Image (cartoon, rainbow, N blue to C red; front, side, top):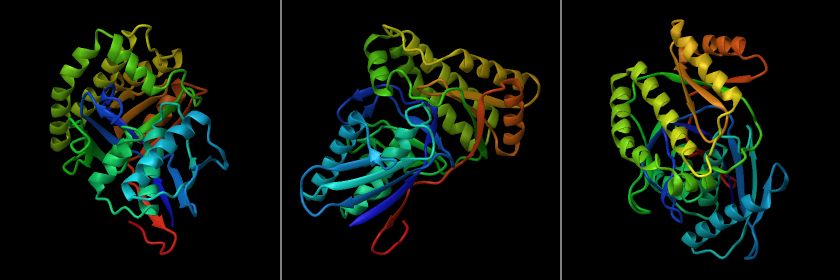
Length: 329
């Protein structure tokens, strides 16, 4: 009655920002991402002999209270689906920074969903596992899959799920610029809510995203790296513009972030094609061709001493092992 799952973070090229339904985590718009082969979350879920309180450990210590409460509510949902009264013990660890805008919640809840579903005996399709992961963190729905994935916004629990993008014809990587590995000052959930409720730029953001997603899907089908990069960079900057219009403004951009955005633009001017994207945090992810990732990393590092850079190739979907068989799926 124990299962271990490993899931990887994903970075959206067409962003998810803002919810239509807070309780079910139904987004305002669909999104598209690339799962990365760095910073995995490893989570083991073991069923306890009877009911009671869940035990949730992060890096062998009790998980902080707010995060533990969220994980506990998620586990309650899983055991309700399974028709079980048994509590669970969760042991989880992130290989990368937590809460720093590097998609730790995506890998975290994808791993928790997969491990909990297996431990409680739920036999879920990839689509249904994606729906389950979404209930913990929206972007976790995409980390169920490797490579490029699209999260269909949908209108309810059944229609909001991610699926792989099987026709992408580009071989992309990302260079992660770690401006600050610490936890961000305002959570994504709170920042999204504030943007939706107060920013006059939220509505235009929502209106333009479907056409941006369509352009991105077509660029991936064509193997047009330039178009993919241009669309992803402007989509990220528009998302941050919507945040800056909130009351009070949500500003994740720092001086280090701006310096990296300028450095990426300089790379292009000098003939090395790369494009920046950012999420809820100061860290900048640079999209590039896989074959040029080392060159991009070295150029950015030379221009920005003191910042850590990590190359991230495209990564796999979630994997699960069950203790009684050790089988992978």
